[in-house]
Length: 128
Image (tube, rainbow, N blue to C red):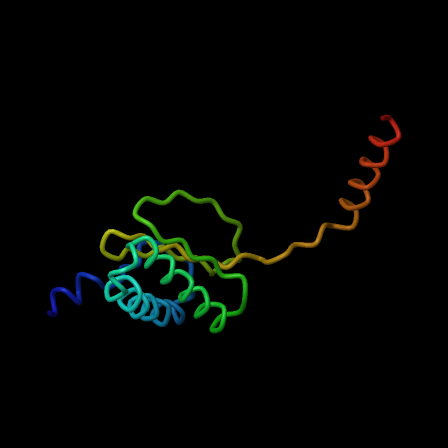
C-alpha cells in the first residue's frame, strides 16, 4: 500500500511558485487526483475523470490564491501561456502531467494603443 501511495504522489517537475505555496498545492493535487482520477467513478472514462480533477483543482486554486488560475491535465501536453511571476508549476502524477498557472486576467489596452487602433479602423473605413 505504501508503494502504491508513493507511486501516485505528485512530483514537482518545474516551478516558479514561492516555496511556501508548493507544499499546499502539491498536497491539494495529491488529494484531488486520488479523489477524482484514481478513485473516480468507473462509469466515467479516464479523460472525463481528469477533467473533473482539473475543475476541482482550479476552484481550489482560485479560492486559495485569487482568480484566473488555469489547469491542464494530460499525458502529452504542449502549451504556451502568459502568466504572473511566481504562479506556475508542472507536476507529474503516474502517466499524467499537471500544469498550473495564474494568468494576469483581462488586460486593458494601453490608452495610446487604443487610440491608434481606433484611428486605424476609422482610416480603413474611410478608405473603403
